[in-house]
Length: 67
Image (cartoon, rainbow, N blue to C red; front, side, top):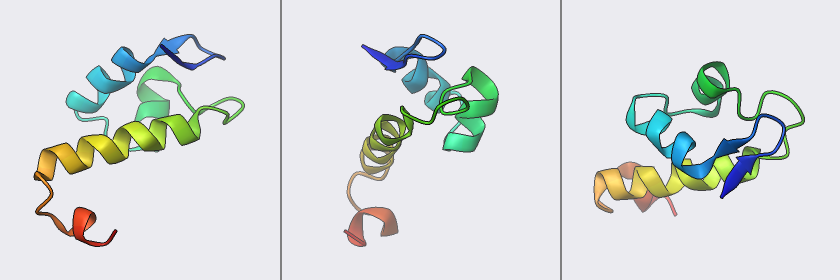
């Protein structure tokens, strides 16, 4: 699934970059350019980042409890 049409970046590329430590839109933008042109993919990127944070904390962290 393509996340960023401007730079043809797939969801799997975004997920790999997050696993490699690029865990913010700013870091992802610098690393694989997503979100750095038209901004149309930022909502999709935020959704992936949110899911990764929930999985990483197992639902026990402050991030999860603020919802």
